[in-house]
Image 1 (cartoon, rainbow over the protein chains, first blue to last red):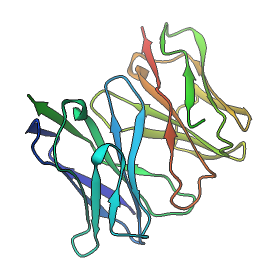
Image 2 (image 1 turned 90 degrees about the horizontal axis):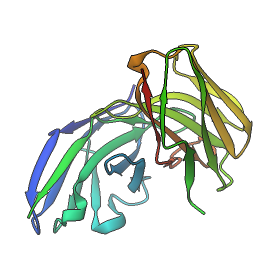
Image 3 (image 1 turned 90 degrees about the vertical axis):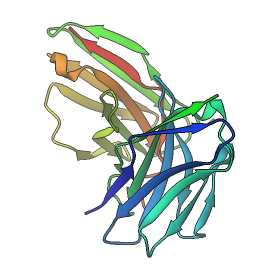
Image 4 (image 1 turned 45 degrees about the vertical axis):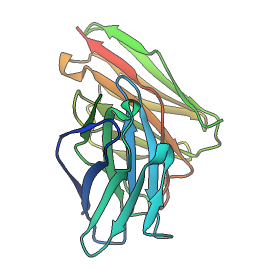
Length: 113
Length: 114
């Protein structure tokens, strides 16, 4: 069985501050891990994906995430928050093969001017 | 073209109506998905088509009926829905549904059942 846990349903940061969104996963096999962003009334957009090629994954819009097997974590970071980063962020896990992707419950990021 | 399109954007229907949601992609993807998303919740998988064949049905009620006429199109036929079926319905596609496949999502159809 696979699962992801996102710590903090709401995170507030000041504009220009570090963004840190937490994700811990559980998977019986080496997983594929994803971060998606969803703006209001829109679909999900892929930010980045971990496929075991490198533990530090760089994504779009200045986001990156580090895979830490020992901590079963895949936290999302961005050095400096922009107002346009305000959105809902979903961490997701797939064990690979023809199996479904499991989404976390989401973290709503608020950026304060 | 990395776009998944969905029509209509908004749909209001009564409980006795029959309507359809449409999804289209031209990325050559062979796996397509329907998700249901309630407010402030993650997407919930409903159906997966792989190579135009239904491969996953997540025990969805029969009032939702998927159809994949060809590799580019995915429909969701709706009949006798309930108010609790009101949600954002998202379509996604991926290369072939295999290991590590990235799913590309459409903008969704906002469905309201009266």
